[in-house]
Length: 153
Image 1 (cartoon, helix red, strand yellow):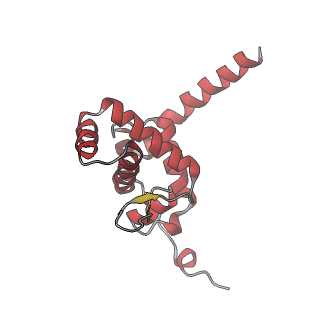
Image 2 (cartoon, rainbow, N blue to C red):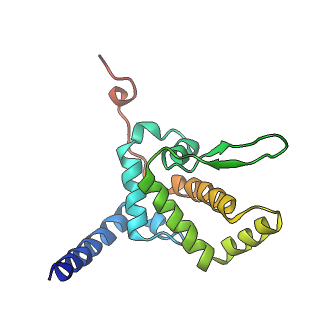
Image 3 (cartoon, helix red, strand yellow):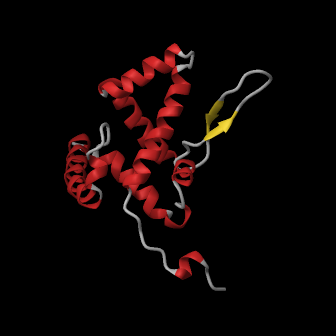
């Protein structure tokens, strides 16, 4: 019975979130691999931190998709930032996995980067950054007041 009640709650929540997210950011939902749940999470992350979103790089850092140098000696590589909003990073990861499976353009990119010698983990890191850049351009921009920018003491 508990499973049935929880399953019903999930269905109701999914039915509610779809139209809300579509109304808030219709272009975001139109992207390949982006569903209502992932778009909702990214909108929540951006909406909770409007003062931090000054560029696409700041959004990527907020979503823990910014690269951090991890080079040593002659090896030149990067790793993902472990800070930031983990749920937003999970949403980006889900989008990347869906695109790797169903999006032809992403599949060609993965094949090319694999031929270049990158590991799957590094390719996913690059794709997360690309997706974060793409999503940042489509996020609705909240209007900041001067008090939000320069707080008075």
